[in-house]
Image 1 (cartoon, rainbow, N blue to C red):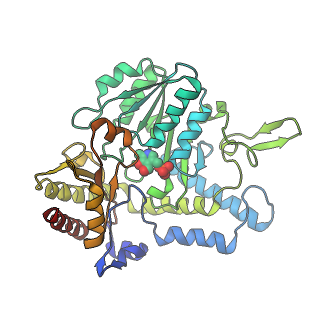
Image 2 (image 1 turned 180 degrees about the vertical axis):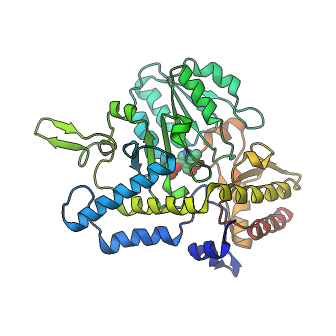
Image 3 (image 1 turned 135 degrees about the vertical axis):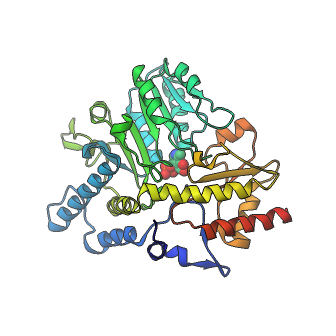
Length: 402
Ligand SMILES: Cc1ncc(COP(=O)(O)O)c(C=O)c1O
């Protein structure tokens, strides 16, 4: 059971009002709120030990080194990885770029994605088509938005890398990752999972999944902005050439040569966002104390209610499966020929309900389907039934006006 008194105290924004109405924040898939504990951990760094990690041997430097090591351990435990397999990045996007630029993909190598990739897991591969002549194929979803395993089984046979969004930010569907990975490995194919929308909502166990690479963003799971993680199996990381190099990536250098450090250091070039990494460790602690069962239960209850209510509007179409249990904390909807930006703006103006509208960086899907855009509600455990009711009541008023 979640303790909403405590949650409200931990997330000050939840006590704020806009135009005399409590703020309803339904945009966590873009950016989650941050609890006080995360902000305090970051402030502590800035106030009391704002030094470098891994370089300076004075007491402040040593303290930062210790805190970064602790944060890496917390994150490693969170996904059941080993410490040296956790590379800190600025976000998921940077992690995918790291992968695309470090894996030795060659001419004609096939990268297999879904049809619902965020631009972050699409554009890096499109760049490699231009630069290296790799190939890209798409496993198109079934009509109800779920994963087409039969099509996948055919296409994976000739692939080099499967690079797929675990939980979609477009419609909230989650692909059957374990089966996908097993089948890929039977065909000698590597797998990367974009876990930007799954890591905040479901338990990720990289060993159980047996996934080769995985990435997520701290800022979507209570962490500071501009924090992220790239995970890779150590034996694979060892073979990687880092794509960003310089300070902190080498053991030594001469005027003509250098010796590279091992993973994860060789991938973390230059001074890092130490406050952010420490805050990310604290975010993971907070999330684990909340518990994924509680997160799932709350999101599902709200998603069920919102789906049921939205389905009463004859013109509104929900993207993805009708069953809310298959859509994580997401309800993405549209009305033919209507600009959903207008709906989102009016919800904010009239009800202080904040949702996202647009193509959610999945332009390719919208262009293919010839759908203008959608309005997206994305929930997290700190959202309540009262907020869901406020949203539905606001939407009712807007639909009448429009
Ligand atoms: C599924 C998915 N992948 C990747 C990203 C990119 O995340 P970031 O902007 O933190 O790199 C997002 C962000 O919305 C996302 O939802």
